[in-house]
Image: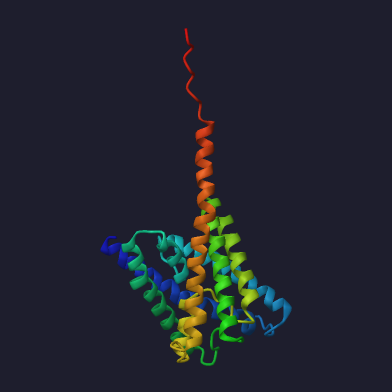
Length: 249
C-alpha cells in the first residue's frame, strides 16, 4: 500500500468515526429537544428511526466517497481477514486505532458542548448474556453484509437499504440489553469518557464478542458461499458446447 493512500485512509477513518458518534447525539437532540417528542413516545421513535435510516444512507455515501474509509472496525476486520497479511496488519495496527481515537475525540467534544447529554450504551444484563447478544447481532449483520456484497454489489440503493434496515432492526432488538451497538469504536469513545474502557464488561461484551462474531460469520460465509461458486463454475462448464466426435470409417 502506498504511503499517501495509507494516510488518506487513516484520516478518513478518523473523521468518519468522529462524525458517527456525533450523528447519534444530534439525532436525539433533533427528535427530543427540537421536535419536542418524549423519551418513549411512539411518534418520536418513528421519527428517530427514520432519521437513523437516512443517516446510514449518508454515511454509506461518505464511505464510498472516501474510497475505503469507514467508521466501524468490524467492517474493516471482515474484509481484512480474507485479504493479504500486510493489509490485515495495517487495519489492525493503524486503521482501527484511528477509528477509536476519532470516536474518543468525538465524544469528548460532545460532552464539552452538551454536558450531561448521556453516557452512551449501557449493559443491562450480565456479561455472558451481553457478550452473547453483541456476538449474535454482529454475526448476523456481517453475514447479511457479505451476502449483499455478493448478490447486489452493483446496486448502491438496494444494498444500502437492506443493510440499513437490517442494522436498525438488530439495534432495536439489542437496545434494551446492550445498546445493540455492533461498533466497538463508538462504544470505546463513551467508555473512555466515563473511565470504563478497561473494565472486563467493556472488553468482553463490546470488543471480544463482536470480533468473535465477525470471525465466525466470515468463516461460515466462506463455507456456505464457496461451494455455490464452484457449482456455478461447474454449471458453466457443463453448458459449454462439447467438441463433435469424429465419425469412424
